[in-house]
Length: 209
Image (cartoon, rainbow, N blue to C red):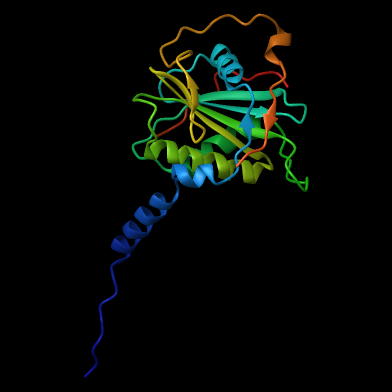
């Protein structure tokens, strides 16, 4: 007589694996802080510039690339709605936009450009699992596109905040009316960095590079 355990059904195994996988595709605040993300010396200038260009509303992500001269090289915005916070899904959405607006830097030994993500959402400034999934997605998209992973910024009714840094401001916020761009020169104003420890809608705007 042989004794043993019946193997789990394929459906049950797939559901368990999927749940565990999704749970692992997000970054906790402590993990993000420990990753040594480059700090923006003037985050207010960057946030205001991206807000003016893309006029983000709730569920809008704005991905921006900063060049070696610490200037805004390219940016794109899109609306991402999902029933569950999944870093894999967000990574794919970000990578798709990056590929449209700027060539990859995978041939470089070290990244020369930095990607920054600003996400406009409901709620307050406190970290959420959705934020953690966007952080995971940004980091992974940067790796696959040869970029340095930069700051993650949330935009809510209370204002903006650079998560993991404790820096933020009341304006602009998610319900702030965007201002007008002054000139093309203003679009490419230098931005200094210092190193420290469902379905998507089409692109709305892309900054010239």
